[in-house]
Image 1 (cartoon, one colour):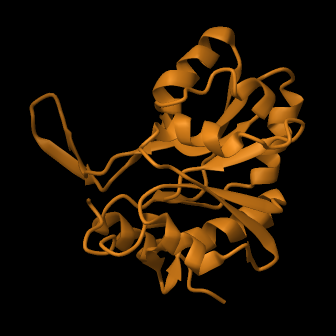
Image 2 (tube, one colour):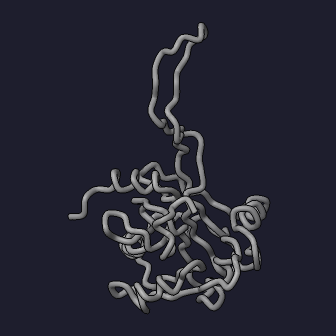
Image 3 (tube, one colour):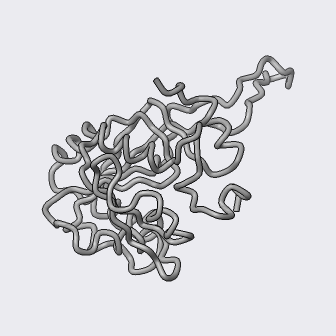
Length: 220
């Protein structure tokens, strides 16, 4: 809704940033930074447009589709997409509106070295969407800081590494991974964080889209 009219005729994944769909950036990042050789779209709204655009591959990377007939939530969608996957392989999961320079291979390695855990979550410093006004004890304004970051306050970065064998036990048939699955993993000590101070944006509104376009380096 917040990206209309751009989403009137296409899913968010096909919205263009500097003339290129978000999903193309993401696949290229997954391949370059994580060595991914196969991508599955957990998709719903106008998912046929994705299939028309990518077909069965993109630049040599196999592309598959896991469409929903009804909204399943993030957890249900991931569960459906994982069904039938090789249980011996770790899986990278990313929200469809994320741009980041995260070195994904390092996150995967951190997950492996952590031992018997179910999932790893990218966390990034919270950045205020508003400017901050600094005042003193006398309530005098002493300065301003535009959209500051808070390095000791972390938010979910929307990128996860999952062990499918274990994750399937905790993923709901319908519901969100953030509310249904992760709290359970925290209780069992099976959720690792991966802090990243680098570039990270998400596209949830026309304003976000403009900020990403202004922040991305021009293509070489």
